Amino acid sequence: MVIKTFDEGYRDDLIFMVLQAKDALGRKPTINEDLLDIKENYIDRGDMFWIAVDENDRVIGCVGYSKTADTTEAFLHRLYVKPSEKRKGIGTALLKIAESSMRDNGVTISKVHLGFPKEQWFESYSFYPKNGYYEYEPRYMKKEL
Image (tube, rainbow, N blue to C red):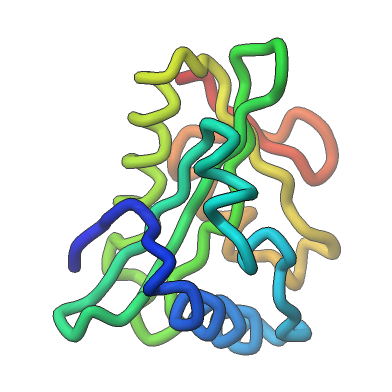
């Protein structure tokens, strides 16, 4: 597995992987509008987005973040791992890259907005606390970097 900065050539494969991940969780597999143009929605704004690719150069994970204007905070977005590749450390590796980049760019607090109901987002509610995040209000977790 290799983690790299997003490149447009992976766009369709990324979207397909996210749809698979949502379907595996029993959620309606809809396309997130921000994924249709990652360059505009992340990179051009000074934010970041990464993908994890396997040995066949297929997308198996992703994560991005966007800084909150006039603060030292940022929100994580779209941390997904292909269903067949879960529990192999890919999500943790993606999270660590994002957190490191945030720190390097002056971000001191990483936040994440979680879905509802918790039963449909059980993996997120378990994953983030294992990585130092805590719920500071319903559906929101954060970590000081």
